[in-house]
Amino acid sequence: LCQIFYKYWSENDARKGTLEQIKVTLDSAKELVKNGVSSKEQIEMVINKNFPVYLENDQTDIQCRKNHQNHKKLIEVTKKCFVTQVEESILFLSIKEDIKDYNELSRATFKSKEKAYQALIRQLDYNEEGIAIVEQDDSILKIPLGKNIILKVLRAGFELTKKSLIEELDEIFN
Image (cartoon, rainbow, N blue to C red; front, side, top):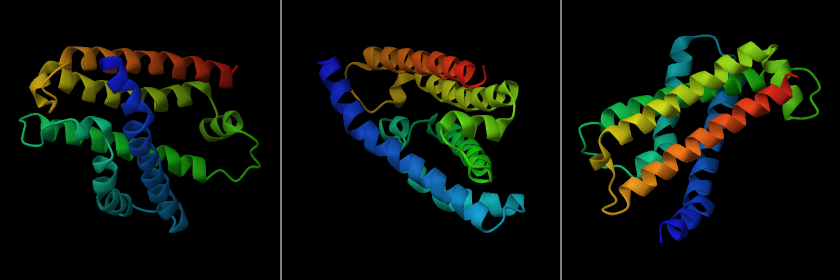
């Protein structure tokens, strides 16, 4: 039953929400690049304007109780995650070189494996923090059954993705 739920969720709801988050992140970064990113206030204004759409499509937030004592902490972490994604997207969109593929874009943006790794770890740390909030008190989840399995799948999926992204980074910069 859990496998069926996860398969349906990952192929439908999660995909749609993630694509919407990518769109709002890129749109935010494009707006800032187009207007010439010049101040923290500008970035904050665009983030605050677009964060509600990002949050509305966040798969963790969708599954959580909005009145739970830890929900505000989770929102704060999700917002930090959004900010870093917009910041990294600004870097990507600011590249003027002729780029053929994602690997070239990554090398042109970050210049070194260490800088790319730092950007990746910053993002992964926020994801880790969000998962930890849910793991510490699973009563934040709206679902009545299968919390243990869902948390295990969430953690395992995160660890697998983390490993895969680090390996991909090694390939890009070697």
